[in-house]
Length: 233
Length: 233
Image 1 (cartoon, rainbow over the protein chains, first blue to last red):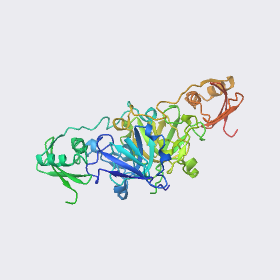
Image 2 (cartoon, each protein chain N blue to C red):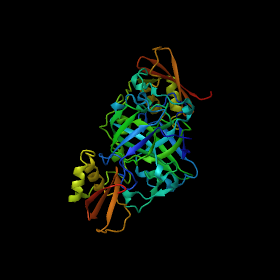
Image 3 (cartoon, rainbow over the protein chains, first blue to last red):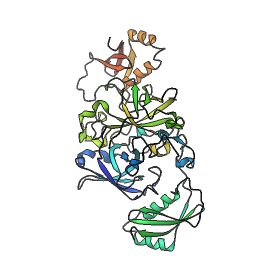
Image 4 (cartoon, rainbow over the protein chains, first blue to last red):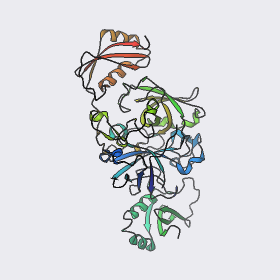
């Protein structure tokens, strides 16, 4: 079956590294979903404004050529134990389709159709194949058994900002009012790969958010954001 | 993007009429999902047994040629009011992809891989494009706002069985132990189209379940099952 994108994501996440492992974990992770012609008509989303959340079926476009694997190593199990690909949300799927529920914060039909989203785990330029309303009576099963991932992952990292980073945040406050929250929530979940062996306190990390390269340093369970460097600088 | 089925559904629902409007409403609606080669390997579902529910991304194969419509008339609104296709779970979508969460009751890897499912809203022979575990910490949002469908649809029809139907049920009890429950739950939601204008008490209805044609008669908010006729008889 051939499927075609009905929209495209414009997200704060410019690379795979740093993207939250599930949607909803980082509410300050914002994106817009721009519908493509011929679907960018206000009537196609009429009534959607009454729903607080929507499902997105999307393509793993950055990893589409990687192929599928029968088993994968989910970060939740420390990156060592293997589970079946169909018991995971891994990208190594036979059909590279992703599924995320995201918060719908607004709809702009002033020129085409743009959905405003929060709590995304979507890479910039992700193709969207379908939008469906989240129906709490059918979709919310709080007592379901969650296998090897029964609860939220830990957000155990304590985040601080260097004096330099504080100055840079302050100068960006008007343009990016939720940037501090975004960085704090992202780093709290420790985006480093689960299977790292090192605990090298001196190592620097970086993640691209919006048009910035956010740099930080780890020391035990503490992260210090050292600088916010404009991308390409 | 081209996607290919990874499995196929064998369901009690042999026609579109009568299928519950959402999964989970009718737990006695059972199906099996048979994985197709090369995906029918036990390792591809390893760890899935720890999850009580799974997401299925499937194709609306019976309506794939119908095309998309910018607005649809959901049964929930009486079949009259129009909402955008992306504010509904209608089949009239640009990409004919469905999304259902179903209960996983067992996994049989004795010859290939077969998942046993309950609470399905899937037509027999539905192609499945992906299976994902239901993650309650990420997927269950009981406080989400559900727009024009905030709650379960009403199940207001009272179901009874004629003496003939009772005899037929009794003779099928070994082969189909949940058949009575299936019929009661299905008819309680009144599968008749929402936009019917009539209230014709004399009209007979029929729905194909398994290899049976289940016949009933409506009178006000009461349904009497009159007979269970073998299909093709």
